[in-house]
Image (cartoon, rainbow, N blue to C red):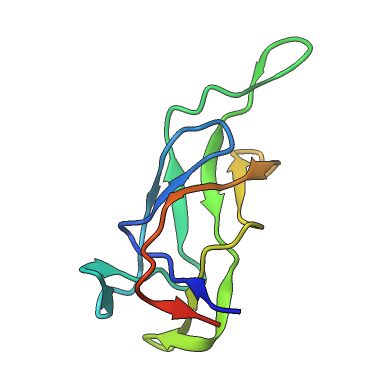
Length: 112
């Protein structure tokens, strides 16, 4: 099954609807004009309002953990990242907050 590659132009949100900023460490390969993310790259989230009940305790998403590495496509020697329903928003305590919501991903380059 082929799945779209994630680029810096992709739009990913934390589970609470706050857009993340995707940061690519590899910059030599562009897909539709944007650098492709590789294994180890993450997204950063600022302004997530999530709080833990019953007593409101702030636990905002701060990182988007991207785990969908391609088994066949390498970028600068590292596996390229694919859109993955298993990607997670993570709090500063490393507690998983829920799945990343992919709002926009390029569809011209797919990988297995």
